[in-house]
Length: 67
Image: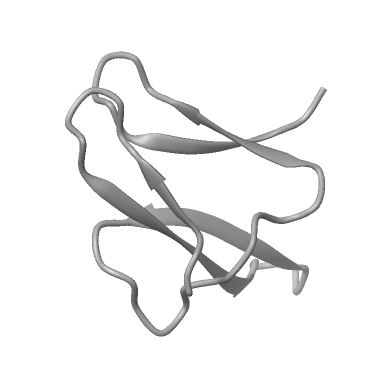
């Protein structure tokens, strides 16, 4: 089951995805994003050291590093 977050503003469910991206300098980074449908890049758990917050204007979930 994919990790999901429900928007407090709209009530819509969003699923967490991860994608490995190579930058111009050759460095590889993992990009995390939420989507309305669970796709092939959906992940099952929240990454270590991150927490979910919500954009107050749009209601979209965001992934932030814990302080």
